[in-house]
Image 1: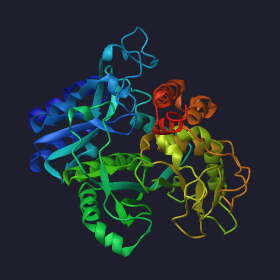
Image 2: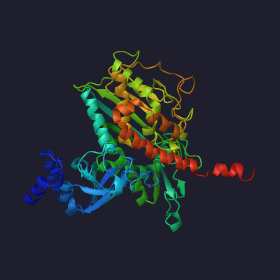
Image 3: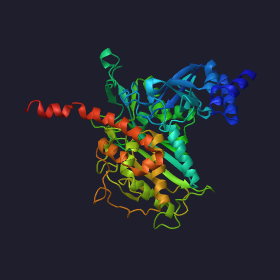
Image 4: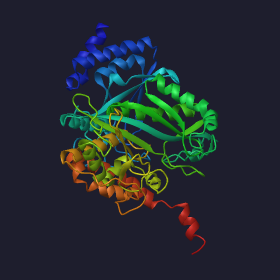
Length: 485
């Protein structure tokens, strides 16, 4: 035990100024707990720019060293698009990253957070450990997802507020017809698997369908509960093989960690059962419904009081109105964060329980922001229905905080609420990822709140993805022109 103490108090992270007495105590407690749990391997992970967990697996004897010294991974993991292509010029003198060294595919440093340790019920000899990401010098990487959200939460706290968030996440689970492991399937990105539905759809919340899907629901629910995720309900959603899980309220960083863990849990548990789970917004399979991620949010003051509880039923509180106004004013430029894929914009269609324009309304599921206020109701909140479930939750929360806080700081007034969210002359949401990129790139608010380096990084990353999409030949083009001309 003494050797563990010495290692933690004299390791690389302490020398780089990234240690503390509290962290040393937490690290020692974690080493003891992992031993008690009989853990053989630790999956030391970080959420990348796409909200995907990546990292290395260490044997349990190396846990102490990882907690004391961190571990290194190639910096290019932060520079890749969704196909795994490095889109920054790392072999040139200028990598395109102003805030720190990224040339030569050198190392970045993963700093484990002992509070994120989770023993995996589907692999009980293994555990997860999430990390913050730093340059090898110990300096923070401003566009690293956890770092950006931590800064945003601190800024909100400095203004006298904390956010409370609740999650509703939709996704699909399909039967998988084949393993798709032929050499010809090993493309970049990999060839999508062939799938079948587990149950017919368009029977929202039907008891008989729930019973049919309960074995899968139970497997996922139990795994989530065993790693401490606060699941409150498991539901049959609208489409075939479409699920929804909801989560109890928590702080933004807690729920951002929860969501990346939940998405990974679902995919890993389902894969072990021969199933394919996807959080893709609108899968290209017959009769599929679009999936959304509905983000509930409210603000509490320093005394813990919910600042969204109205005094009467006539409208939102001043703070709630300002927060709504900020979210609406910056909705279009926020879409790069809430809807970061080409596919996600195909959900923004009228009469599909998804927004297609910038609006808010009382308990209106067609509006972008659904207000759920009632005098005396401690759960008074808003529900932002704009995001897709594939979004990086750290970036989503950071964007919501930046936009909402801008509304509060400038005492913005929300527009009149809507009763007809799919009608009128209100601003429409971006129709494509390309429109969203342009809006985000030109956002003075995000450049002031996040910094130019973060904005330029995300723009370059997503523009590479958008340009690949534009260059790809589609089945529509082949059907439309190949025989006609």
